[in-house]
Image (cartoon, rainbow, N blue to C red; front, side, top):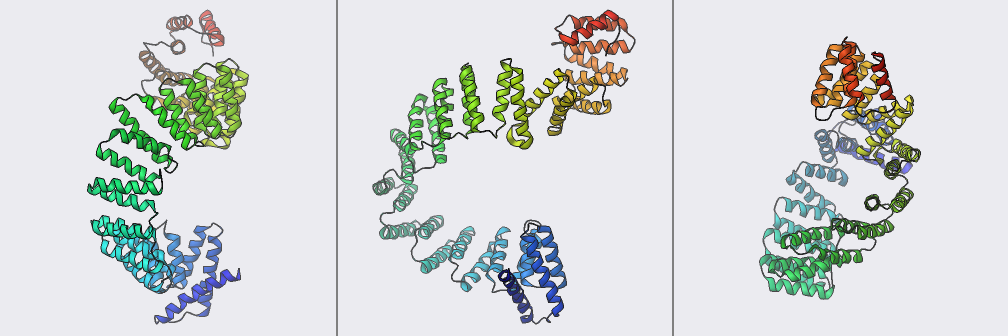
Length: 577
């Protein structure tokens, strides 16, 4: 702690000396002490994560004793993400007050770069590299800035200054070549490359770079010779293979393009990302030339051989096999993918889809079980298990899995996509609705509406249940109105709204909306909507009309308690809740 405070006091002392040198009257000791105390306190806030408190304390320190370099620097750093213009002013002041402080000057240069004031940034770097000779990296940054303003001559001179400090370096030399190329000075670029090749003859990258320059200028024979020399030094090196690919495309040698492409896919020296780009090009080539896509088998196999532990390649291959209607081969490849990477959720999902498509119930259940074991923190496979068991009529088992999925979602909302989350809660709502468990029924309705306040189906469900239970009809009406406003031609939403209005005694409006619902469902009549129409007619005193609609609803597909209640209405000629 003493060492830390000593550094802070040194910074403060530096700031005080700067003021004295500028001819300003020295501050009273009491003011300096208060400023220093506030400055130290700001660090305590800063390193305990209280950024706002640190800023407030620094601002107070600046207000009682302005023009201190250390305080200005910290204020500028604190404001960079909040108020860049104000931050810039403080950083500039810190640099002016303490011109020999490397970090203050560097911070100001970064601020100039952020606002694209490259001229000022270059001026700052030029001053900096003269004062601080041991910061070679600043020379490289200075060269980059010269390139940005297209002053290539100054960029080269700067890189040469760097070479004089550090000696010949392949990275710096290659940077010089790139600058010469941008400047259009091909002769100097070749000369630099020749010097590099002479000093480091076994560096295959230099030969590729030289070949690329010949290729760009159309000197194809010279380009090919350079690529061959690179391959002699490092057989199957990725840079040479990719450049040869461009060479053969340029010369129109399609058979050799294919040969090099296969070697690229088999190379362990080329990233998977680049291989995917070549694969896309290859697919486009096969499509354009109408070559059988079965050729891709060889390519995928070579990629898998080169990167045996990469599950993504196997997943891509499985996707291709599925598109080729080779489902069993796809399953085998996906089994390999989940073996290589058991955490690959997408691999498990593809495997599950394929086994389910094959109607192999035993294998599907095995995949579900293995996926849950492999990724227990994922709600997806518990959700899929719930759906699977429900489809097999095992509702109790389905419920267990759905509840497990819900418990994971409760901890991590991102553990299930939105559509599956809606379906999960809708399933649980329906289950408890059928069981007559009001508490849990409303629990899942509330979860769905809270998570998806604009989901019309969820709002409609909630509104209808509230109306059915004669509970909070104002809330039900507000929810239902939102659905009708958004989709005024949706019969189910119109029916719910009419049903709620009937419950509230607004019968004229209820009749209007239920008739709208009937109008829009002519092609697919719904028994419940027809029954509700009868209910509203009865409440309006039209008993004959009500009986007609109830009987019409009864002969349509109805079951259970709903049909029994409808029968009571018809037998008693009376509305029944």
